[in-house]
Amino acid sequence: MADQTLMEKLVSLCKRRGFVFQSSEIYGGLGSVWDYGPLGVALKKNIKERWWRAMVHARDDIEGLDAAILMHPRVWEASGHVSGFTDPLVDCRACKARFRADQLDLARCPEKPSLKPGAHTKCDLTEPRMFNLMFKTFMGPLEETAAAVYLRPETAQGIYVNYLNVLQSSRQRIPFGIAQIGKAFRNEITPGNFIFRTREFEQMEMQFFVKPGADADWFEQWRGFRMAWHHHLGLRPEKLRWHQHAANELAHYARAAYDIEYEFPFGWQEIEGIHNRGDFDLGRHQEHSGKKLEYFDQAENTRYLPYIIETSAGADRVTLTVLADAYREEQVEGEVRVVLGFNPAIAPIKAAVLPLVKKDGMPEVATALYHELRKRWPCFYDDAGAIGRRYRRMDEAGTPFCITIDGQTSTDRTVTVRHRDSMLQERPSIDQLTDFLAERVSEG
Ligand code: ATP
Image 1 (spheres, rainbow, N blue to C red):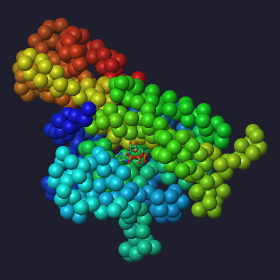
Image 2: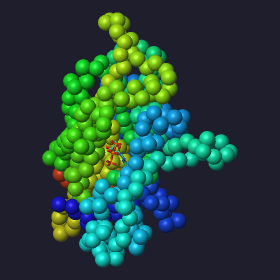
Image 3: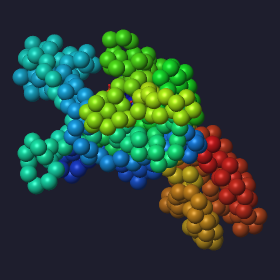
Image 4: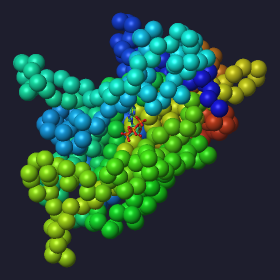
């Protein structure tokens, strides 16, 4: 069941604690464009790094790439985006709102939010017309058609057009993959749900090149790897499911496609797509560029256009998933405790160092410890207010451990470590803390 209040609470927490702000807020904001604050940028960076480690560092059959956002305009003709990257758009002549014709069931009439667009007597909807989602701009000083370029609507094309460069320079052999994280832009008609659907976003994409015939097996392997990655990220398994594209949803060239969906407060939605794209992409680029993109298989002395298995996830969407999955409220001593229960490995702050009071040498010991731990992990120092309040502030930021320096520390060098999730406390020696944290917050 959709739970909009939960989303509202999450959006407000994200702003209050510095995860996500509306873009250009002091000018009234820019529609569906968001900025990441200090905690948000750390969280998203940790997610991207984790993806990069799993997809590039941990494998010897995947290479990294960082292609430019601007590409030759003919790339987008070859890819089919100029002619086909469109959504059907419906306008309401009465209230001027715009909707995706294929999502009218999910949309709401701005004049009467209990109704769908078209259901209110005042609604006056146009016929659907196709609207291209690519942002267009101009390269060079002249704003003329010949100078038009696009902000890329996906990162994948940068991989396809560099496939031979990477193959030759890395000395990979098929099967192998190319991974990339980068910005993409789509002029979405009905963006929304916070950072779920935005006009500027980041993708984490990997294209795996395989021999035709080996594609079905690799497709299954990649489905397995990618779902396991989301589980390992710490997402609740019961909130994840597969959605197989039915024949009428499949792109005409796609041999198979599955989405990994998450149950957000606003319903089940795609967070990642895994696609068997056949030889469509390389075939189109070969045709449009006139350059041979075939692979020469030395062992078998044959040439072929590789098939591609794609895994495509949104970094912002996964960040929202992590936030929504981690958010919980608990009743503690008559108060509501708000917790972001992140997997410690991706938490923006790993530990808070808190002197119990600002006297008796506690701040000095705490400061020294804080500087020591900061050499390895993002930590936070807080000496303001009652200790209970300080714990709550860290719960809301998703900090897994609070380390308190108290009166006993000066006598036996022990500290209190308070666990975010259980709120249980233990008392290790201050000298064991580096090992203690290393065991618990490092990447698994
Ligand atoms: P949708 O049908 O929701 O528009 P899509 O099927 O077009 O999405 P893909 O082109 O497969 O999405 O993009 C791959 C991934 O990129 C998606 O699973 C999602 O995580 C992310 N993504 C796509 N569009 C957006 C967007 N507007 N904002 C944030 N993330 C996006």
